[in-house]
Length: 79
Image (tube, rainbow, N blue to C red; front, side, top):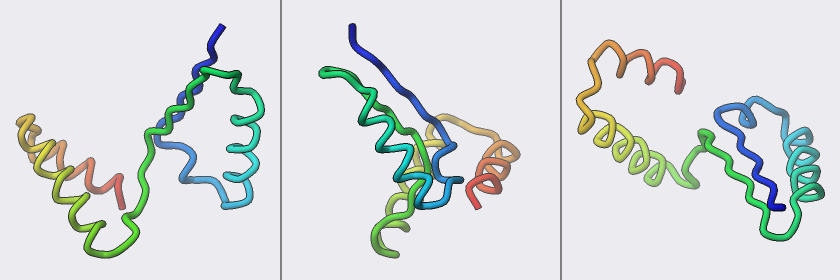
């Protein structure tokens, strides 16, 4: 039986040491063929990459016709 572990928008709140402990625990419990999916916010390695990622995200959500109100709320959460 394969194990699937999913985390979304939560790990970035942890301290670095707690992240290390969590990732080790996830590694320890995943069996061969298991999958860990982490859908979280991370900063780009450089300011240029961060800007590229943010612009890609903005273009993607605007292409889905998000309302300006919802877009501003999402951007506020990303701060």
